[in-house]
Image (tube, rainbow, N blue to C red; front, side):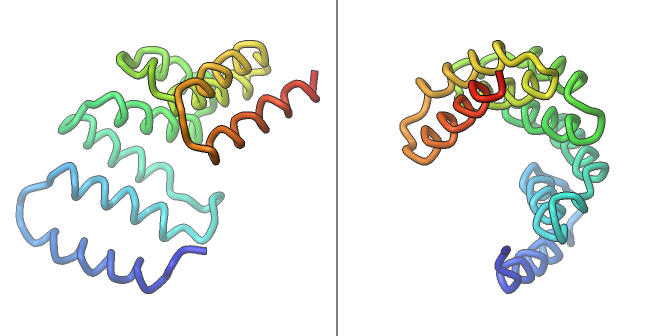
Length: 147
């Protein structure tokens, strides 16, 4: 469902920007986006190369969001246990709803539904987005049904 014309334009810009010898966080972020947008479907996403780019990005910009995104990639490659360990090490994201939704998903994958639900409830209080609130509530509802 991606816009192929815009993706092609993005690849053109990435090619132009790679002519120098310097790699910035923007190059790495563009590379990550390129891997995501060029995958035919979620299952064909090149998580290995995305992880390599996140590792490079971490050296340039070790922000909490970089670490969170890297942990999500680790979950795709190595499962929820390793990713959960990495997410729990991240500081300064306890007021960010996506931090809590990520923890919820990782706990859910480990069948720790009470912890998952707690983090979803925390996430609810941290976003004003009607779409996000609706999605989080539906995830909480799914957990209550599967009890």
